[in-house]
Image 1: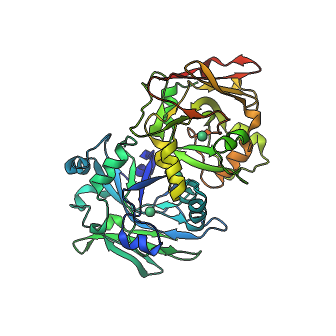
Image 2: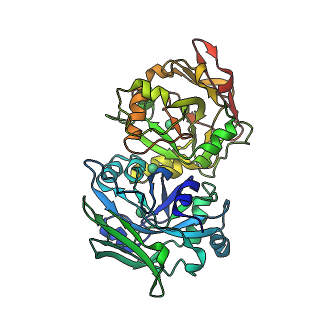
Image 3: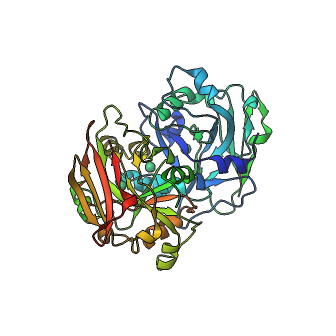
Length: 221
Length: 221
Ligand SMILES: [Mg+2]
Ligand SMILES: [Mg+2]
Ligand SMILES: [Mg+2]
């Protein structure tokens, strides 16, 4: 498996699904989408382990969203939603990622009908773990994701709660834009998002059948 | 100068400014922004000369927006708005580009406060010209951009009409996200945007002091 730096270097597109866990939709008072919707983060927002602290831009209310990330391994175009095997075959490996969000910037954009790119795209707004070998996650729809702030667990849910599963996500994305080897897909965040301030320590990880996956361990300050 | 394919291959981020020409803002009944705003297009949306036809996704009202594109030549971070020379030095060359937009998808997103990434990001939604050597455009704020549909000129304006000039654009972008060599910045579209249907032929180009720049010639079907 490549290093996190190689994952960052090989990435040309990060597609993220929004509102993919029911309890997270409720906590932000959002409408439940009838179909998945997506937004881009720039590769320049990736922060690799040991890559330094999270930037906290002035005036920004900074929120964390822990997510399972897919590293795409091949060109995917017009994938059928029913093609579960095709979707799994497209995955080269995984990462744990935090979809950092300038929530006040995003709220303002939503109100005005403006793009989310700035709110989601600041440098360091996508901390990632080391790459997780595909074999360490036999079923991406049965993974426990967790995130703690100052050692208090704030997010802790299973990916079996996704509203739209990975084949549907890759199908919808790939009918709009071709997925290329190295692209990353973030699959949505469970409930428990919240804000962090300077000095807070974020830790994250994921477990499969109660066993922590070592590569997924993530710590940012 | 590299080929258009090399431009596409080296690009990891396309940042586009919205509403940067007053008469274009009026024609779409948009609010005039107090500060520039930006959105991302994925590199996978780039269509190089000879790369095939524009895709017209079913149910999509497809709009053209001709724009001057900057090919970034080096890492740019926290550029000062007053650093005009720094902004010009960051430019390695230019392209003519069409920021194709699924206008009905974008209108829906704007209404719901959702991201623009899909509306702006379909495959082929960014036709580009061959790269234009930097020396062919002595002043990027004095370039005439034009676009025709079926040989009828529909857009034809000078970049001196930009509301926010390039140093301000690169300053604002680079205070959010680092610009890297190979990134592309689209600088906004003048008035005259409109829709195209299957069979329409789009041609575009740009001129400097009344002289067409050969590399900028662009034709898509
Ligand atoms: Mg957006
Ligand atoms: Mg998210
Ligand atoms: Mg545009």
